[in-house]
Image (cartoon, rainbow, N blue to C red; front, side, top):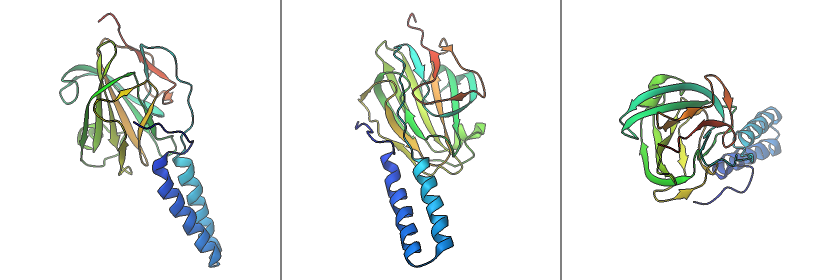
Length: 217
């Protein structure tokens, strides 16, 4: 999996170039107000696809946040879709103003990549996790712990990008994809994982430690 090296996610370049080109054409044609609107749109799109560097905690048992946003769910559930067992589910909601680049929570090897088409309900609603389009990665850590990180499309999100592939060994904090224009990421962990965050807490991808894995299990 190729690593992102610049502060703008490469998936954003077509949008930025298109908006910038439109701005220049409108300005040359003398449509000042339209050019100003296009310039504002270009600035927003460039800002939306920003991909800032993060300081990755050096803790092999830490579960890093996969997305910028706000914690909207912490619940133990019976997961029959990804891990096939009891799991601790943590959900992060990303609004349109958050960084949308997603990062790997724990170092591990990708066992499965599952992309399922679906609906586009608002990502902060419970039914979004069940009905919306999603892309799920299931990984196994070096200690043998399985977990899943699931990108869920939202009301405005119409494109999930996942660069990871089955068999990839990926380090914690590595950029692996993004979701365009508002969405959520769900994390499925073993139920004995120790939680480090609270509901409604703001979190950052690759920096905030959501939980600690139980290495003695």
